[in-house]
Amino acid sequence: MTFNELGLGPSLLKNLSDAGYTAATPVQAQTIAAALAGGDLLVSSQTGSGKTAAFLLPLLQKLTPNASVARKSRARFAPAEPKALVLAPTRELALQVMAAAEKYGVRGQGLKAVAILGGMPYPKQMQLLAQNPEILVATPGRLIDHMASGKISFAQLEVLILDEADRMLDMGFIEDIEKIVAATPATRQTLLFSATLDGLVGKVAQRITREARVIRVASSAAARAKIEQRLHRVDDSQHKGRLLDYLLRDAAIDQALVFTATKRDADRVAGELSVAGFAAAALHGDMHQSVRNRTLDALRSGRLRVLVATDVAARGIDVPTISHVINYDLPHSPEDYVHRIGRTGRAGRAGLAVSLVGHAEGITVRNIERFTRQPIAVDVVAGYEAKKSAVPVRAKPRRAPPRGAPRSEGRYAKPAPKAAANSGAKRERYAGR
Ligand code: ADP
Ligand code: MG
Image 1 (spheres, rainbow, N blue to C red):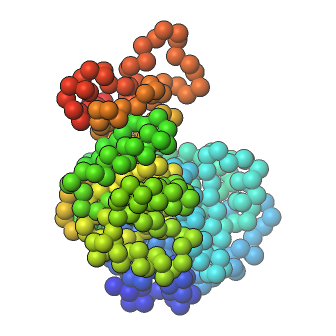
Image 2: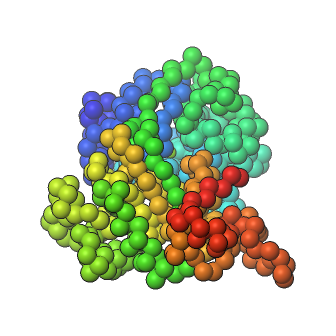
Image 3: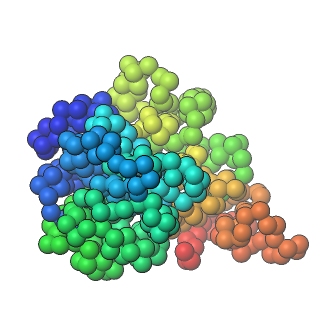
């Protein structure tokens, strides 16, 4: 469905086409019109399905007409009186909502959005609130602090949005959320987004919404397909190179997408693989569009077996024959990880995602596992084991373990060399979370 059919104004439509959005995703198609019509909504749909735009677009559309009038006519020390509040579980997710609001054109609509987050200096937040924004994006904890100090009033609140409600509850924000909700007018519209509407989140949703319409979007083939995830510990980039070469020689690979952190590494790794005899090429933003198109054609037609890409360049690649995704470098954010591994397991096929993990990257892995709520199995290939011992993930950072303490209890502990050698490419799935 196109955005034109959903009742959005011309300037929003222009921003969306500038952002490269050609059609609404299923959750957007169902949510936008319903949100514009009014009434409460409970929406469940998987990560990466476009929920942010599903709530921001109708919000920007709705708040536009009398935006600037409200801001001018207020007393100097009056509290901020936002018309919309978006609650998100973490600082990162709240900042993503802010970035999306910018992209979809909050300013072009004559609106102001600010974020109230933990870790932000207090005076800076006071300054932001003094601008009396129409839209407030906040994490629950920090917002409670400001409400207590009388700097925010929700008397004028029209729309309350809870993004990733299940995660907020997982993180123990239930009391804060209930306090915040209690401070808002009963006439508000409430939109709740969650990966699931079962269990606690369903109960809370019942309490804070009225006659809510439930929108459940079936997960895409990528989410349903079984994407197996593994990781290998690596010592350095030379070790990465050797292991990558080994992994790519697996006959089970139809086509592989290899992710690097930088464009330079994409070129370098693709070059090394070509020299080693692989049908490999790089894809990144510094390449001319015509070259990129030719590379993608070669991938689709099967002439290319390995594509080495950066996150930005790989966005939107939908080639069902990609059987393997290899993270030569880990992505910065768990969301990027989910997007990356979603490039495999397309069209209902099985997929395998393998990450090469340096010794200092245990935290990154743990964040990914928390985000996806799926453990990543540690894989060891005989002859390709990491030499150094891992930094145990559960240990507090910066504090050295006691002298002589066994280091083999960390999650990324080196496996007993004998066991690995005996069983060939032995796989270890750790049990704990
Ligand atoms: P969710 O909140 O459901 O996890 P996001 O709102 O973060 O998903 O969107 C995931 C990604 O998809 C973002 O990079 C966003 O810019 C992009 N996106 C969202 N809607 C569209 C669309 N209609 N067309 C193309 N890309 C989109
Ligand atoms: Mg989201």
